[in-house]
Length: 121
Image (cartoon, rainbow, N blue to C red):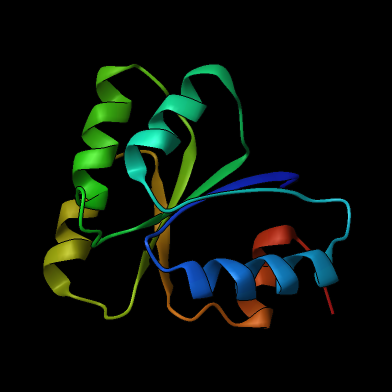
C-alpha cells in the first residue's frame, strides 16, 4: 500500500495539481515534493517513502543520474519514471535499474493516480 510518495520534478505547476488530486483521492496520504533533485537526495538520506515519482529530464540532473546517486548510497525504493514523451531510449535505460517499475506520462491522470494508490473504482 502506498502511503508516502516523493515527487522529484522541476515543474511546480504539476506539483500543485498532483498534490490536490492525490489528496482528493486519499486525504491521509503523505506527499513530499522537490524541484531540486539534490534536496530530494538529501531528504531520502533520513526519510523513507513507499514510492518515488521521478522526472526523466530536469535541469540539474537527469532522472538516470539521480538513480545512479541513489544506487551509490545503497538506497532502494520503488520508482516510477515521469516523462512527457515515451522515448524508446528511456525505456531501454530503465532496464539498467531494478528499482524502476514503470513509466508515467505527464500530466498524471486521476485514473493512474488511483491505480498507484490501489484505489479501485
